[in-house]
Length: 206
Ligand code: SAH
Image 1 (cartoon, rainbow, N blue to C red):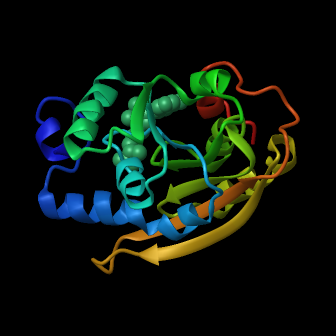
Image 2: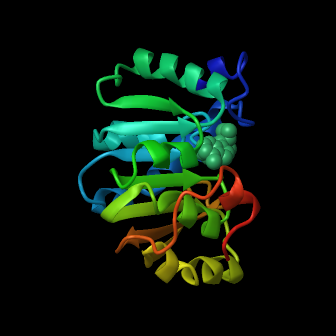
């Protein structure tokens, strides 16, 4: 469905069936163990694009899911896919930025995921005001540099987040590396969040 929708709306650069199976479906499910460790409750996939990792994770977990993207034509294409998949009872879209969602639903999410959205310090900042205490941010990263992880860890106190796990995985092509990094919301953030739209990604705190 994504490959078909992609002919009309630019959702992904991957247009080949085999590559889609590997880099979208299989890859999305690599984080399933970490996702299942998150407390029960509402789930947001930030910068979902073509619905990854959000849709595969929503199907496998049955969680109430919000697929978040600032580009309306992407969320519109996802709305059709959600209906066609028959998962509209627990999956819906939000057209807008993560920062806007945090103003509307502060502290309401148990789980946030993000793949190919931003650096770890930015992700931590975007997720912190959305998560309730005990909630998890599950980040899908290719090969994070040590500095990127250090930068995120340096924000832990300010954002009330704590690094809980880091796991490397290899996809079934025996080539593609994936790192799943999990942060837990441990207390209320010490600064006012969200900052102005775009600040977290353009001017990260770390
Ligand atoms: N997660 C998908 C798409 C990654 S591309 C995948 O891994 O395949 C990043 C997406 O995030 C784009 O679709 C872009 O429109 C969206 N985006 C970027 N910044 C955002 C923000 N602050 N809030 C919501 N969506 C954002």
